[in-house]
Every structure is written in structure tokens, then in C-alpha cells.
Image (cartoon, rainbow, N blue to C red; front, side, top):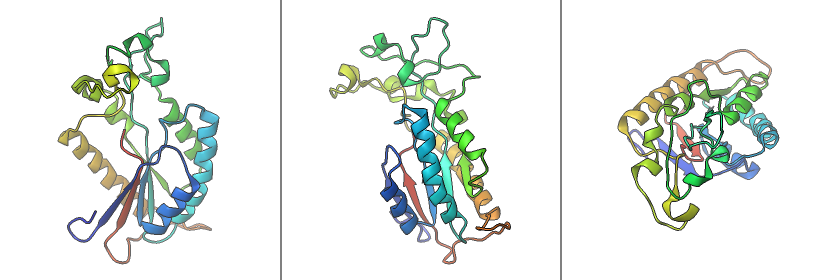
Amino acid sequence: QRAVGGMRMMYARVTTMQPDEVDAAIGTADVIIINWGLHYQRMPDYKEQLHAAFKVLDDYASRPGKAVLFQETGAQHFKASDPRAFDTGEYEHRDRSTDTNCACKAIEDFNVNVRNQVLREVLDTRLYPNIQLLPFYQLTRPRWRWHFGNCTQRPNGWNYYTCCDCTHFCYSPGMWHAHLHAFKETLGKAYSSRVPSGGLLSGGVPSSGVPRIVRSSRPQ
């Protein structure tokens, strides 16, 4: 998709890390915005695949005019079955009795998303200094009423007849304007703090002045 000024935006829906998709992204884009997370249930697998992808992506992002932004996984707000009333909001811990009567629910302020915790552990190794973390979790955490499950019922045969969705968000200009602001700030940081292979900080923008952006996976 071509935007004003000549920028091109490409989108690929990838639920888990696929090496060929990573290769395709670095072969076609100047800026890559990426997220994998919700489709991983085993965190050791998630960590291993993040390391594998980040080795390639960090080298790519060290080049002039290139940038990689890894977006945090958004908050889920499934009602939990935990007798302690400790709600993580995660689908795996949901109260299954609500599957046929969709009910999204607020989660605690102190909750730590397990996938974002793994992501931060990988980035905290400092092995991948050119990969920028794009905030998203805190923007979505309080918006438990904004999910498809609370906006509409969609009898499409998936997940019983209600299609209970406490993961994806209904469209809101205000929410996405805030996220785009974070994107612009993070992209600016990426271009001003590049660490080339071997070391020193450098900056720069695409030589054409017109970036090509690939967004992999969809905003949750």
C-alpha cells in the first residue's frame, strides 16, 4: 500500500516465527514492525525462537537506513477461573464457563504478561542492541471493554456460537493515534542509536528518504 510521499507499507500475518518470513521481510523493507507472542503456549520455545530471529534482525537493523521495532504483546482480558481472583486475562487461564456467554474482565494493574516477560529477558541480554521495543501492553491493559467480545457477538461457528474474543480490540482513533505517537518516537530512537556490527553508535535515515515498512503479524 502506497502512502502520501511515496512510502510503501506491506503487511504479513504470521502467527509464529518462520525463518523464511524473516528473510522475506529483511529483503523488502527499511523498517520492520513485528510481533509474535499470543500463539506461543510454551515459553521456552518462544524464547528460543526470539533469539533465533533477533540474531538476524539485529544485524539487519545495524545497517544505515534500517530499523526493527518489536511490539509488545497486547493485554488479554478473559475472565479467570483462579479461586484467588487473580486475573492475568490470558486465554489459557480463562474461566471456560464463559465461553458460551462472553465476558471480558479487567485485570490487575500489577499483572506481568508472561510473553512480554520473556521478551524483556531476551532483550536484557543486550545481545540485540539495535532492536527497539515498541510499547503496547500498558496502552491496552485498561481497555478491557474495547474487545470484540464486548462490542458484538459473531455467530460464526468458532469457539462455540458466541466467538468470545477478549484479545483483539475494536477500532478507536484515540487508541491508535496514541500508538502511532509511540511508534514515531521509537522509530526516531532506532535511527539515532544504531550500533553497527563491531560497535560505535551511528545514525541515519533511508537514503531515498522514503521508507518501506513491513508490519508482520497483526496488532492484538
